[in-house]
Length: 463
Image (cartoon, one colour):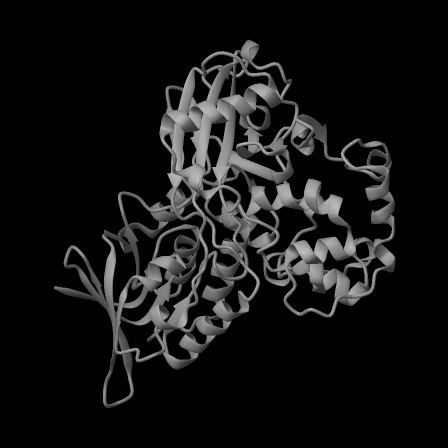
């Protein structure tokens, strides 16, 4: 039997759940479809023998007012944990040593992370002319403005940590739009940091220095679990969507029929698609002509990424772990992209915080995609080689766990504008069809929440 609904949201990650929560306030007849055992998408927390393990985003940075308002409205403020002050310490690996990322001009002058030549090159940045390439790679942008060494030991590891990506492939304008704003409007990244105006930021953005880093007592999945609970019967667990059919009546009214592999069927006038782009391309589209995702969307890279949790006794780790974690440049030729010191950030991540520590390592990504999917034993062996070299770990961990994401994070590559153009063209051609997700306007949790709330505010539900 086909179920009819005014609005259907396909996909129940943080974007779909937030959009559903906001829309249901004014349009009770809203369905949120999800595939699998639970909603939440990449926000996933595992509790194992007293350990709290994040298999997706490990922290949430409250960078905009939309996310802080959502947490408050959901009644989650009392469950929120703020990161320990050591989280301000970030380490970059150079010559197989952890070096603190300098946090002040004085520290920058003294740091061994960059050579004297690189430091002098950075001071030249305000005098570099504005670029003229409208779709410059992030690597070329950084080379031009900051120099090769800054690219190698700052931007390369940072991009691996955020996108699991490669700055040679990412678009500076699409992946880090603020860089282009600072250059084009203020002529310099350094000068722009001091002169930037509120209107230059995205709506609701807070200055990064003022944005607290948080999690919840029971982990980040608390946020999506609470959203799903609020949605109640509007949540429609099901299975993979196999076909979407566009139907147009003689009156001009358009509807969309959704079929799943278990035989469920839904129909709506407003369809919001928050599924990953590679999933959208695999659906059968009927009645869309040449303006369907399988025909319109360019191929977008989603590199594989694996998350490796390692729990140790405190005495089996030589490093004090007095920071957020470490990022590893590709030039260091290590196996892992980076590692978070979870038990230093928040309490209750281990069975006993005074006797155990928790590390979360990331492998694969664009740098080494094959490694992400290698045999489990080989992964542990090679990751432990790196943690032994860098952190002084010894012996076998008391906890080991791998979570694999075969297609992790969409890469906002050079020419990614083609994706935005294709999405806009399809929305224009098909009334009531909308695309929303981390493939558009930012990949981070705060970006997804902001985009979903702002979308809901502007949508006119069917009567």
